[in-house]
Length: 332
Image 1 (tube, rainbow, N blue to C red):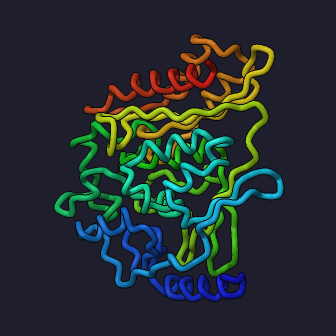
Image 2: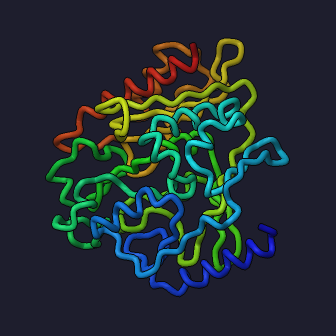
Image 3: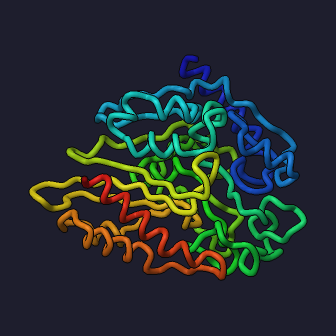
């Protein structure tokens, strides 16, 4: 599709969604964009999502992976997870992303799920998906059933008195460690949002999960050029080996020179209300020798502010071990 035709197609979709009372990516939106539909259709069947209009965007030319002029990577929002995971540039330069994608869901779902859809994936908290139970994320002001209920799989970082639901995505954890940028096209034009600013903490408004506004459409994700000499790894710990969400995961990118860590990026999944980057762990790693003591110190720093509930206190130690092992693997 030529740029002019692409602009007309996206403008038509934006005009419909902008007229709705809320964003296409927030809870309760009247208009939803659909590509793979691997999350949206499930939630519609459960009556969690009740859009009045669903716009198929699969005709848009957003399914390519391209090098950027500075040596980074431009990933279209409609690139399927399987295609992205097996792309030679991703496997060579961004191994942590390939590993994260391949650890998610099943082969069949990865063949359908898209980059943009994964960024907007909804929580797997059982109370969010059960319309018979109060949930502030689904219906603001009704309460959080998870805080005094089943919390084993839920967050210990970034929580509030209104929500402790985890972000379920593996891909988003890797993108956070890679310092990706999300490209959004809306009624005011195009804007680029660092992934660390794209996701919102629940605070007093758990129903707002991202910075997406009415009329917004994710078009691409931009990865910066790989850091010289860096290696990366994704480790996921879960109850079973396939088709299961993380109890804890770690995406790490580090470079070592002359026996010292010169570059460190750390993000965790399964433990945060959003993909959780840890500047505390990165600071603990910077300039230190890549050994067990350094990694244990970084892991302790990453979990220092954890606030577990009655059933997920084990995640504190599990996350520390997960991060330590990921770092040991990439430094080997």
